Length: 84
Image 1 (cartoon, rainbow, N blue to C red):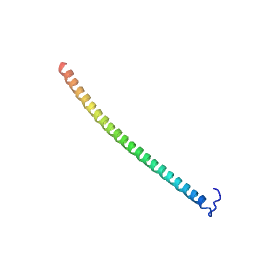
Image 2: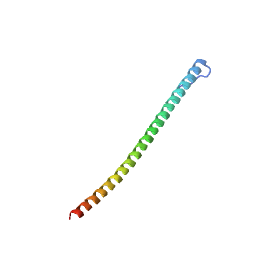
Image 3: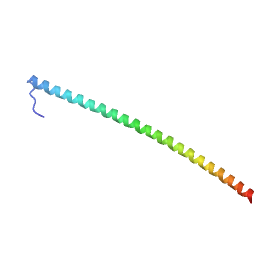
Image 4: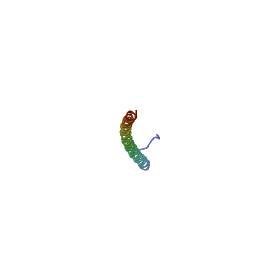
């Protein structure tokens, strides 16, 4: 950092203005990253909910497939027993 002469008002003004501009840029960057993080987290949460719903549907379909297979096996057993 260059040595600042506090008696030179234009230099002090420029220095302070530079600091204020940098602070505003940092604040805007921080706000942007906070929004991005929030947006990404909401997206992850939505994807998790979709995955959980899909897993529940798969479990439901597997249960239905098992019951249909058992029903089919029962009907085949009855048919096979009746024809013998």
